[in-house]
Amino acid sequence: MKSVARQVTFYAIAIGIWVLVAHLHIRPPYLFPPPKEVLQSLWAGFADHSFWIAIAVSMKRIAVGYALSVALRVLLGLLMATSDFLEQTLGGLLVSLQSLPSICWLPMAVLWFGLSEKAILFVVVMGSVLSVTISMETGRKQMPKIYAMAGRNLGAHGLKLFLFVLFPASLPYVLTGLKQRMGVCLALPDRGRDDFR
Amino acid sequence: MTTSSSQRFTSADRYLPTRLAAWPISSVATSRGLQTAVEGQRPKVALQNITLEYKTNGSHLLALDHINLQVKAGEFLCIVGPSGCGKSTLLHLIAGLQQPTSGTVLIDGEPVHAPGTDRILIFQELGLFPWLKVADNVEFGLKMKGIPKAERKQKADHYLHLVQLSQFADSYIHELSGGMRQQVALARALATEPDVLLMDEPFAALDAQTRDLLHDELERIWEQTGRTIIFVTHNVREAARLGDRVVVFTFRPGRIKREFAVDQPRPRQIEHPAVSQCAKEILDELREEINKSLEQEYRVSS
Image 1 (cartoon, chains in turn green, brown):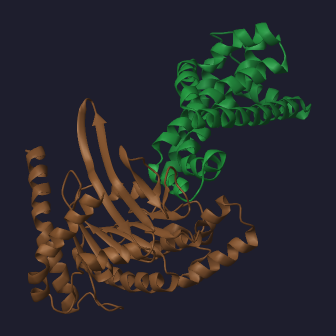
Image 2 (cartoon, chains in turn orange, cyan):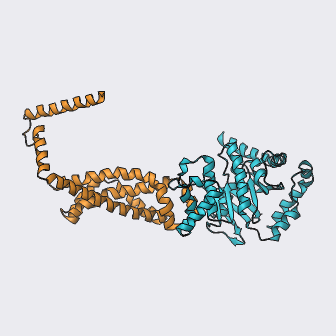
């Protein structure tokens, strides 16, 4: 109860300061509007459905981007899991690429795909696929070796070993990475859109 | 190979008179007795001059040194030794999870190169899959073999019934007690119907009461299924309780120090004086090696 009261007080004061600063006209109202005008715009946006459409478009981008990157990273993870050669070569490249902030892909996306839906998708996918492939790899290495041994011992090898043992065994470690990158997928379409305007 | 085994049996002969005197109920088999038993049929498992060497940063560690050992079909063989004698590694070699530096593992006369479901290893840590239900764990090996669902289920039911865990088929591993997990691992191993069961200190982490219970269970299941069992332990009482034959390993490098035949009627009781006496004999043989391992540990840590 006390914490609710604190939060209400905090937001009341924050909005109070906002109203105060807006009415001082330090900046013109189109750069720093008072809360009332912001609420009116928000209402208008939902009323003429343009915000609903924008939300739907963003959600679609997230869904498509996330699905694409999941598919890609399972493929990459599989390749690296089955081949030491690929793990050392491709794996090394991915480690160096994943340190790039995903927004760095934007100029290239615009040059290659123009101001299109494809460009946004490209940024979304690049932003999440690399680091999640890495966290999947790390997950696979962190998981107790006993599962792989038990699996091989019971006759699993190759693809079956990956699908029925390595993948489920590394899932707890991978899931942390997936959750983390879901946030990036959410943030990216909007960041991308603002940059296109 | 012949030289090495005859040496082994000669050493057993040398101990024979005193052993029989001190140990009247059980007995150490004579060299002839053991050899004719092995010659009578092809050994299920034969280890020929198994040597394993680890190379790390230029230094060599000899883990196993010319191990020669034969196990009959249906035999219950126990291997005891101090920690670090390579006894667990030996099971990995037989399972095909690891390759020896030199020497051959033969199953029914055929050399082993890879894991196979004719010999299943039960790990000390069990390695049960926490993402699968108990029944699915038991079915796993059969699924890998591509056996249809209905048949898998029937076999899993059978072996879960054998270890008396039928009512836990739909539980997850973390819902079971330590002893029950042991039983699931046993059922999972048995379900693929292997000829050879390799058990790596399976009961080491259990409390004494559960362990006694599982000894009875394992003996019963072994007698019902007729599998060959190679059972690694550091617990000499356990070895005397379970084994037809007990092999004592030396501390690093692992070599076969002595063999004991435990000629006690089954089912056995761990408190039975003859079993205790047998355990004592084995322990006397082992103590020297345990001291060596402790000495080494002390030297490393100080």
